[in-house]
Amino acid sequence: MEKPKMILIAEEKLAREVTLGVIVTRPLTVWHYIIPGMFIIDFLRRGSALKKYTENFLFPRKLAVDAAQALAQGEPEADVFEHIENDTRVWLNSLDLYSTGLLQAQVGAIKLLADHYGMLLKEDGLSVYALMKAAYQNQENLQTFFEELTAAEAEVDRELLAKKGENEKLKEKILAEQKQLEERRAKIIEEVF
Image (cartoon, rainbow, N blue to C red; front, side, top):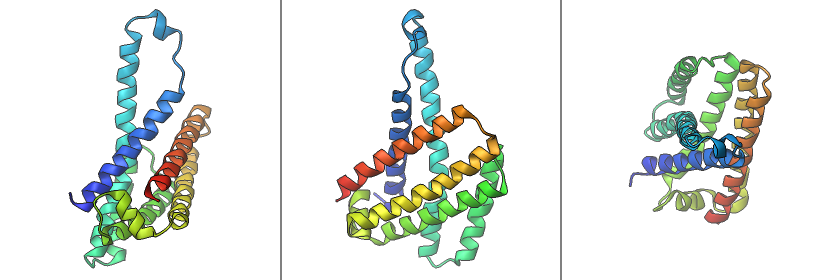
């Protein structure tokens, strides 16, 4: 399998695990037991949430993989990231989430991911974990990258909250997602090393 495709499949799997982890932590209400069709309605709603989260999680990662490939082929960094910034702006506008701060935060996270994917694309291996092991050499280096990525994602989340307004439900959702990402990344480190 091509490395870029392998990377995106691993990222999609991570997105699904995070979403399912967030969904499972929400308890069932009494309505799930009283109304027979409520389970089906909830199942469909959760399926929709899974799809939406996965799409939004993957979009910047696809841009980052494309950027890593373009940079590896020798395209000028300024041109690559100008294209990334334009695509990100269009994406944020399509979600009605555009703000200068959110755009800058998202592009910063994409640059970090592009560096990461660039390292992975240079290595040989039959799985993303093998590529990570070869690229990062030890647990501490991979942990450092994940910490940098978590900080960049937290900045995206802060800008998202600033754009959407202080909303307790959104804050809870973001905190649950951050917790799931942290747990999943800890497992990845264990499995890689």
